[in-house]
Length: 411
Ligand SMILES: Cc1cc2nc3c(=O)[nH]c(=O)nc-3n(C[C@H](O)[C@H](O)[C@H](O)COP(=O)(O)OP(=O)(O)OC[C@H]3O[C@@H](n4cnc5c(N)ncnc54)[C@H](O)[C@@H]3O)c2cc1C
Image 1 (cartoon, rainbow, N blue to C red):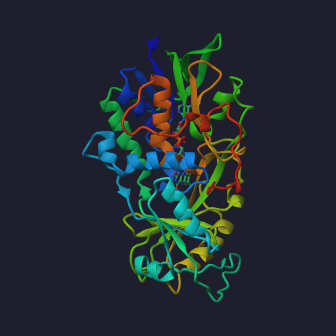
Image 2 (image 1 turned 60 degrees about the vertical axis):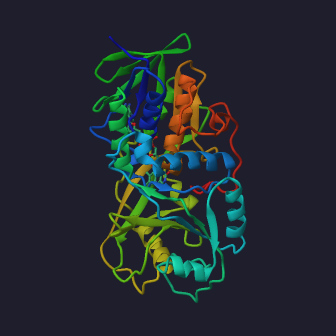
Image 3 (image 1 turned 180 degrees about the horizontal axis):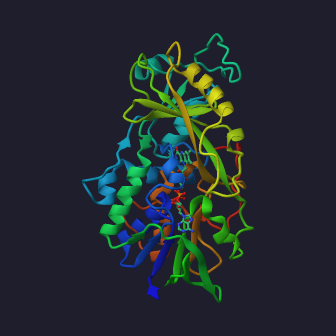
């Protein structure tokens, strides 16, 4: 029987961040087991990978700051000048119907060390002529035009942007392997072995057993069986949820740079993709995060017409072009939502040696390097550069639900 110190279940962005962060600070023998044939078969492969700092709670702003800090200094973080992934530092622009919102958010974020500015309409037109400043919600059903009303203030997170998610994952796999981590694909884990309240190993489908004292379960939308079989399932209502994305060609007549944009009146976010040739559009509405998926291996991979249409009306309203033309496509991915409070559960569980990072919802990509640091510090007791300053109690398994004004991805 093979023996290891630590087994990580799932080579998504969270599992690989944890494995890499442990390897950066210890000599532990680490095996990462991934059921897929290659990187990015779970949430990470479908991720929009938007890296924004604005969250409701200072603890998550801190976690986002620490996670995005690693992406912004990616070659230093992974310890290689040959990174595939790149941080696209376009800024994250937020439009709100509330004219006072951006001003107060600039102050709040500034007090947490985040560079943010409030742009009036003239400053917005100067920085991003492609974006219309209208404060009125568009007609999402019929796409009926209205007389737009500007005059608001718009929040710009200067250091936000997005990352190439699968490239980042591959970089982490390479960096972890370079530090001695064994990353195995086509290696589905059947279960975790627990004896006397402590982890003793894992069993793979096919019968192979690896003895270990520590397991980090980061199986993304496949996490539930691991929790339920060991009495950990009832504590948090975790739901694998179908999430849809639309993408269109960037209109040729659209002027200037596009930022990552969170358009709250329109209920969408969007960003450039594919060297700026395309625009991907997702939702920030609670109603679009409702489709629980019973089997994460079996869900509709396309986007529905009644999802696509309103998102295009919203995009049309926000972009400074007469008409959106060209082919329209869509796809769906999954992420796991913690219905109690939209926030992840990270850290040790009541079973000795059984650590989890689940329920990362639409936040997990940006937070991953910092969540990895959190787990690594808890397991090894060691700190390192690219650590996180967030208090681990905030996301702990035995915490109380966090109170939120709105139960959506903007949490
Ligand atoms: C459409 C979409 C848009 C998103 N946009 C953003 C965004 O803009 N910004 C942001 O920060 N986050 C975003 N997210 C969320 C983010 O991508 C996820 O929170 C994050 O990728 C979760 O990573 P993970 O490693 O936990 O899960 P996953 O990437 O799903 O990794 C889990 C891995 O475990 C493997 N696995 C499962 N079961 C087993 C088993 N039994 N044995 C071995 N391996 C197993 C799976 O194959 C998978 O590769 C988005 C997600 C989606 C779907």
